[in-house]
Amino acid sequence: MVPDLDDAVEEEKTKAELPKKFEDRCKWLEEKFKALESVDYQCEVDTKKLNLVPSLVLPPKFKMPEFEKYNGTSCPEAHITMFCRRMTGYVNNDQLLIHCFQDSLTGVAAKWYNQLSCTQIKSWKDLAQAFMKHYGHVTDIAPDRITLQNMEKKSGESFRKYAQRWREVVTQV
Image (cartoon, rainbow, N blue to C red):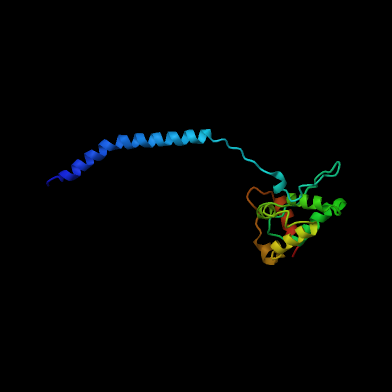
């Protein structure tokens, strides 16, 4: 077998250029790092633009109630009802209702709330309607006997907890 001298010459040439390419690449990376170090990152966030009710003044001694968190998978009407019952003393304060509603949401429902703007939501009624429009298709599906039959004790769950969970489902059948 006769070696191809052109390939050998080309290979030697490539080997000779490799350190130069490596050095050039290192210099390029150093320049990029220096440029990143010199950048002054100042994240300016206008909290008034992020807030649905920027002019909200919390009532004196107001304490946020504990809410059952809505995640977008249960009945939205039931959630609004429970929210309003927790906020009974403040049902005439639209700004406070709008502000506190976010604390009753989690997951995708919280993301939905975060994309709202104050141009869309002017009152509690606007927020409740937007919420119902977005989640109105979700309804609580009552469990049936099959659900009960398929219930199993979870690993690490005490029998007492399992029995309580089972009884809760029984009341809904």
